[in-house]
Image (cartoon, rainbow, N blue to C red; front, side, top):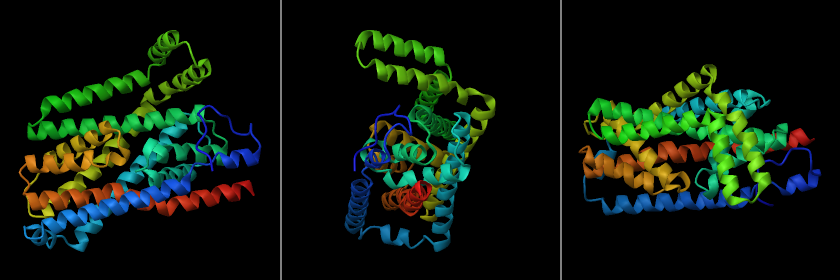
Length: 339
């Protein structure tokens, strides 16, 4: 099967057999995801083996099944809240698909979180196109708005954590200001259109690509309306706050004294590091940043190692498992729709 086609291709303009060949390389992507998970677990096992003579085993014994269940519930709450935000943004951009289907496709995309090129996010758009005929020019703003809302919420939570702890205040403020500026730019089409025109004049190539970019930009101000922006940001902040609470509960259960402000600051700065790295799922960058920041707030080495492993399992890899469970359901829905 071929890769996802370029954005801007309209549904219904190709024969069914050609559209079938346009499906993402799901099999190869899922195999890579499984391999990355095995490598991650192998790395965690090796790290714990080297720390077997430390306090790691004693720290792990402090975790109860109840704490683990609460952490998974908080992680699921994050995914659900962000999924509802996806629906809110979709409505704002005029995507005429049932809310249940949009939520299902949002969850299904998590199956490919750790694949290169943001395939998990792109497959959500492909599903909308195949099942409901949503053109990529209409769904691409949804993707952009979703990512910006994530970054704005994470940086605002990092700023709140910095205020509570009086640490890294300048760094967090700069990040929050940058994301708010990005959000403001996305909601002002004339600014983006001038930037596109300036770029096209200098490149002097691919006029079709720039034309599609203009179409996308003209729809972006839809997220600037208070009826869209306020609930979207609220859902984003609540969702990522739930992940900060996961870190708080895990670290406290492992016997370290850490407050809400510190957990917000540590988790969100690690998330920013993972996003800036452009690595799939922030693998490596987010993990080592989380470990290092936990050590900076004086979490003991054994507790920091365990907390990093458990938090990443409960946040990143739990999402991947949910994606594996929901992607087949979404694909079966496509076959039923064609029938």
